[in-house]
Length: 136
Image (cartoon, rainbow, N blue to C red):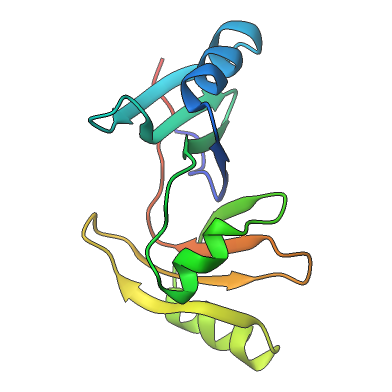
């Protein structure tokens, strides 16, 4: 069995449907999962290529929270990294002076995660959710 993925870039697109088509049909990614909103925009999608994956979704209005405001003004990327001990990882980040936007919290989908902003404005979320590539 392959090692679980530990870094999964998360991207937002104004036209996520077109981005899915490009990644799948032109670049050879395999669509693993897609969740659409009622308006046809992409709430969440996962695409695999080799043993790597990207997660993506449609640009949308974000809630008026520190995290929501930061997402509305994203830098070049938002990335998700799998870690086993979110709280210890968070404590190291805080000790290093990282700008924590969302402290560790349990999510409805079973993950525990937190988010920081890097000096270039990228958002990094560290959590326990592990996307799985397709088998076969």
